[in-house]
Image 1 (tube, rainbow, N blue to C red):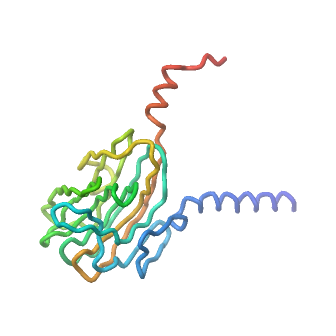
Image 2 (cartoon, rainbow, N blue to C red):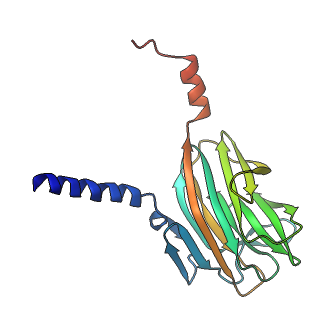
Image 3 (cartoon, rainbow, N blue to C red):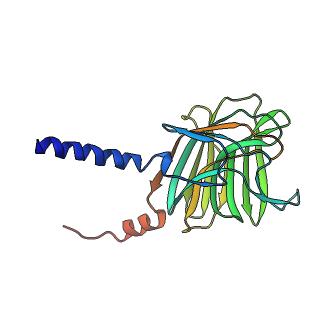
Length: 220
């Protein structure tokens, strides 16, 4: 009986350990009216007339779109699968990496003039915008971001096997960041966006690893 109890408690604790890594443990910034989590998938009704942008070109600053995130320090690789029922100009969904309201990166799919673009906005005080135009619609896309030192490398894939770099952007090193899934609808009445298999993997600190390698202990 005691053995069964111990095994049962071990099973419960193991389950809690796994649960600690699930989407339910993340946080909302600008929580949308409707959203749900089903296993490893987050679905949301994107808030109408919402976006992230600062100053440049358009002359306005907005910071009011849904963003579901966890906070991480150090270096990491993050990945997520993204799909959306894009409807009108500038509908967008993807991954965001955010220090604060003046420093963030958002990257994913953006629907512009009836076409799908791979889009990245990098903001440090003011925003810039780079795109890779796709020649056909896609049902989903994977975005991967790798943080090393003071850089974020951003990749995309159509099959989660072959990845292509789409941007290398500066971000302050040794500063915790919020990372997760965002969607925005600047010009419309909202749409449905879906995110699955979001995962952040810790990478050993590059500078520390080199120091340890060069100063190896003589343990016996």
